[in-house]
Amino acid sequence: MTIDNGSVSQIGMRRLLKRGAIAFAIVMSFRTFQFFPGMPYVQEVWYAVCFLTVLFAYPFWKVRTGFRFAPFELYLWLLMIAGLILAAWPAEHVFGQPFIYGILSRRETVLVAGWLILAKMLQRGIVELADIEAALLFLAWSTFVLYSVARLLFNPSDFTAYGEGLVTHPMIGVEPSFKFQPYFLIFGTFYYAIRGFRARRRRYYLAAAVLLLAALGGSGRGLALCAVVTLLVFLYRVRGFRRTAIAAILFAGVAAILGAGFYVIFPQPLSTRIAGFSDAFSVALTGSQTQDPSANARLFETVAALPYIKAHPFLGNGVVSHQWQGGTETAIGEYFFAADIGIFGIVFSIGIVGLLLYAIQYRIAWLAAKQLPHSLHHPFLDAIKAFILFSAFYSLETGQYVWDANTTIFFVVLLNSFVARRDIDNPYYNWISERWPTLRPALSA
Image 1 (cartoon, rainbow, N blue to C red):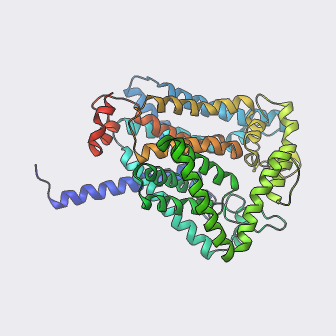
Image 2 (tube, one colour; image 1 turned 90 degrees about the horizontal axis):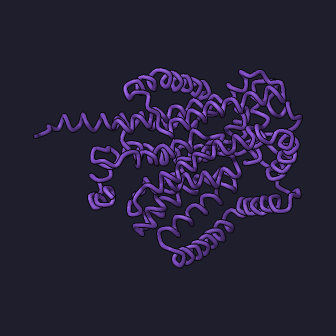
Image 3 (spheres, rainbow, N blue to C red; image 1 turned 30 degrees about the horizontal axis):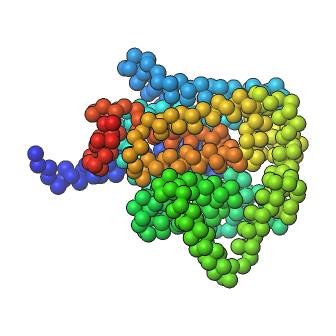
């Protein structure tokens, strides 16, 4: 069979458009630009699109399959329904907030339902893992360019009117900075770093370093620590303890040399960052105030949350909407954001029950990873596993796996897609097998 150039171009353009649509859907479902000027309304429209898609497309697919539900599907539905109830009912009981406000405060839950559609599209071959891989790498580099340009050309103080979703809260002695979502940059870091661990190519290390530095540019200390720990875990799995120790020492030496050079050129920013790490550890270990307003604010927020946690430990106190009488700050009477205090914020809002319910996603990811052959390695699969592990670490500080469950569950869905079926007609394994023929024996094991 011959294919003319026009057909080849048409197929290439069709795939490019499909990947562009996938990238758009991912970036909207991650809420990456939700707080950018003009974007809140676009994000609200996307919520409605996801809700209508799930309302009409999902039942249609279930009718065709005889209403058979996989355990993962049932878990996602339980997570969404129970998560909304835990957000709304306790807030009505404790603070008197109307039930509907609690539901609307967690309306991003509909984005999790959207991943049910993605799972079905992967299963039917409408979307391929190769397309999602390409879309995520495109988003990693495009957000790198966008964030870098914004930091070079714009002053964060000019955007404080857009709220704390875009810039940090102004504090005495601390200038506002952009709060750009780093998830695509972190994914790209893991993708290239672990690929470098396996292939030992310098260009992959360089790409990972560039993306990691961009991710840390306006992010907190916890993200840096969690990313480094995740990379060390995977370095250990790839090269063993001895080589990991040697690599860690070499990395520390290179970092020290680069840090010294950076200090000579920009002494103040580096001193501030080092002091920030020191203050954060001091607050965490001693519980005492420091010179860092950000670390102190988290200490005060934790102290404010403890009486409420003690009063309602199992079901929590709910999620108070910012649209209702000023939000949690008014309800508690002081500066407070549950996402600032990680696990404590989760227990404060949805209790121990909610904390454990959302944590089941990691159990599902663990079971899925165990079903894959040990000999199966690919940068995309490695990066998926690494991001899930990173999110578990990072959630201790930020509660990401609850407040951004739409992000973590996306990667759990991708991991499950690798192990959904193992027969010869499976599109996921065919995709791997065609690109890496040497893995065929492992895939059929």
